[in-house]
Image (tube, rainbow, N blue to C red; front, side, top):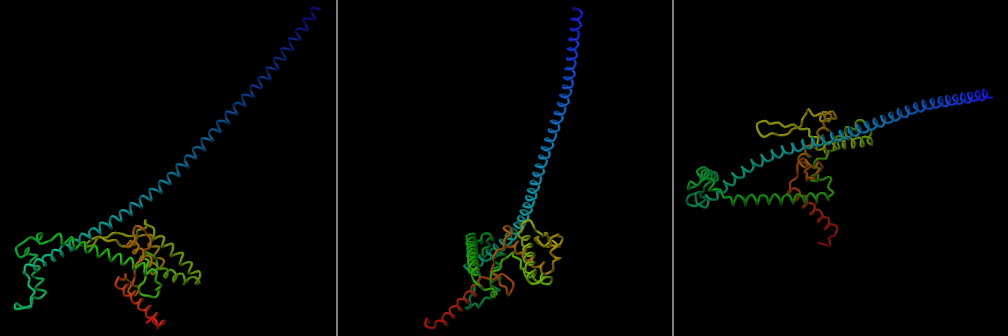
Length: 343
């Protein structure tokens, strides 16, 4: 019995050991699978992290690229504005030089006028037609020049003969006349803008606006009338936008025996393209460009002006007033003719 019981115990131990070994084998397999799964998860997380980092880097690079483009655009605009300011400063320098020259001439004329006045008061120059005869204008001018050269009858200096108060008064009067003339011209532009006079010699012209006729004539030689109109308007509008662009300044500055001046630069690529369009179109565009630079260099919009179309020049105030007076007389005549009882 003891031997049977011992044999049964060994069998139980053997089965238990076998079961434990089997469990350990299973656990080892599970641990291996878990390790593989853990490695796979780690690899996946690493890959996801790299992908995220890559996307973030690409996003940052794209953002940096956009900022660089924006900065380049702003730098280009700033460069264009600096060029525009430089050109305007050059224009102001030329104008200041011209005004300085005109001021010197005006000062000299004021001195001569004052010397003439002083000479007349002192009796140095006698314009008399009595016993001593008539002194001619040339003699009068010669006496004035002698007074200027010698400093007056009593050897006074030129500075002493020059009356600053008189000078200031004349300058003030001149400024007042110029202002009044400007206001009159401004009012006439408003009046002529309301008058339908397309066939009259004197009417409003928009300075800086391209004449579309050369574009229509060029298109008419290649297309029917309707298509030619559309093509002419399209091409004319494109060049008008170019003129309105303050950054397009196809000029070069030259200096020859006097103050420098700006002339069209034949080497400008845009002007070369314009010349290829034909002589009439080239003249129409360059004429509008010159008008724009003269009348509204900074604003770059067309400006109304009173224009004498018959003679191709700016109309004078007197011509405009004479024209309006003529229109008033015509209207009065028609009114009396249509209503004789009102006479």
